[in-house]
Amino acid sequence: MEYARPELLAEPDWLQEHLDDPGVRIVDCARLEAYRRAHIPGAVYLPVHYYIKEPGPPGEEFGTFVMPPESFAQLMGSLGIDNDTLVVAYDDNNSLLAARLWWVLKYYGHTKAKVLNGGWHRWLTERRPVTFHASHPAPRSFVARPNPDVIADAEFLLQHYADPAWCVLDARTDEEWDGRNDRGNKRRGHVPGARHLEWIRFVSRDDRRVFLPAAELRRLLDEAGVPRDAPVITYCQGGIRAAHAAFVLELLGYEHVRVYDGSMRDWANRDDTPLEV
Image 1 (tube, rainbow, N blue to C red):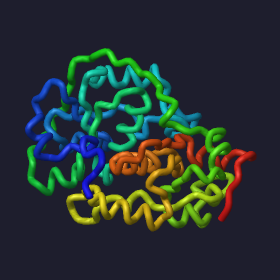
Image 2 (cartoon, helix red, strand yellow):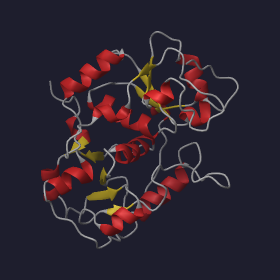
Image 3 (cartoon, rainbow, N blue to C red):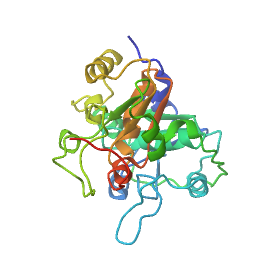
């Protein structure tokens, strides 16, 4: 069985043919040091913290929730991205950060986005062209249009976590799931009734780091107890791994997927939200 939405992925052959396409903007989502060392020709660097979160309080690198629409629109425009630009995102961490950018674009109404299948690891493994020259495209105008149907907050999760019609998917590690690692939160554990499947299992462990075939992804989700026809809310610690899980679900054709953007940074530090270990 093939992916239901293969158009969400960019394969390296296709991207190499479109490196000079003015309608395509490649975004490197890794850290600045990695971008400066080498990147895909024409790729721009994401000049904010790659989680694309609101500014954090003093002493913290980033905040709990997605950056506001005005800031995101300004950021995209500065990268030469407008509402007609096809964005191809990649990173050097199993597409974790690329999927986060894909989801934030989707949340802000921009569905012309792809994730490079295999990212930087595959691109290097296949000996494709790289450069250390930075790209500085002319700014464009981007309009952010929030889509409330793809995001969840604590109140939404409180209303739906015990609803048998919904599925809640925890994409964190085993240690976070069972409370051995509290990640600095006031409380530990997982949302009652949630299913658990760590995000890294969606990606191959060879040098190519590609998304697993559709049949293998479906088997993993079936074994985790994620129904194929249910609406799903994904969460993790800060909404990053949750976005990666959401990308996989949409790749497989799930129709209703929401990311709890605040995730455990929000849920486990409140006093009105249930947890179990």
